[in-house]
Length: 230
Ligand SMILES: [Zn+2]
Image (cartoon, rainbow, N blue to C red; front, side, top):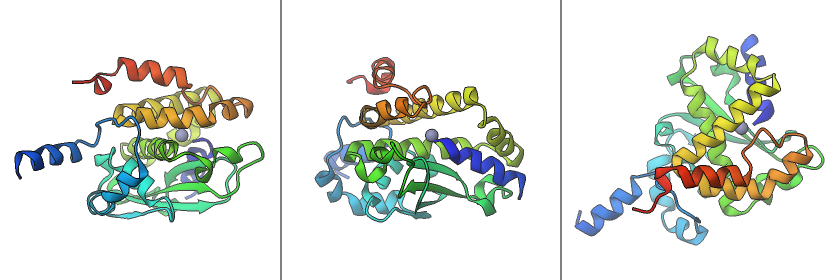
């Protein structure tokens, strides 16, 4: 989301049985959309999720399960170092390569997802702690989608990306595309839950165009074969 990539740009300047098979297939098809994740059910598979998607990750205290469910939709991030941090930030969530790894090769980088402990006035309700379980998974998925984008960028690419992210037009394009990637990774319903809870606040904050509206998300889900019943 907003300041994240800008910060990155500035930083860059400086510096079984058939049953088992069915279960296994379900479990290892991370892009399969789930209309509503149930926390109590997810807790039962916590150890499995941690084993498969928790490597090289520093999970956010108190939100480990939500982060792991979101990570399960991004198998391409299995071997990436990702640290979730809590800090006072104007916007609720952000992501970027760590300062020290901006100059490193993409496969040696560490990425930071920052979860705000105190946002600017008017955005408190958008903080992770104030969202529903599915919306939490959705917004963490959005931040992971940013990291998928960073994976493909070398130093120059990151620099350009950071510099372009200053322009509102480019921010809108980047954030809209990140929402679309989140939907394409099977987290459309969770992104929708998030959008329903925060979109009006983003509009009031003058950032309504940056993120897809609930209606836009529903339209994309309806058109996406991933979401069609078999
Ligand atoms: Zn974003």
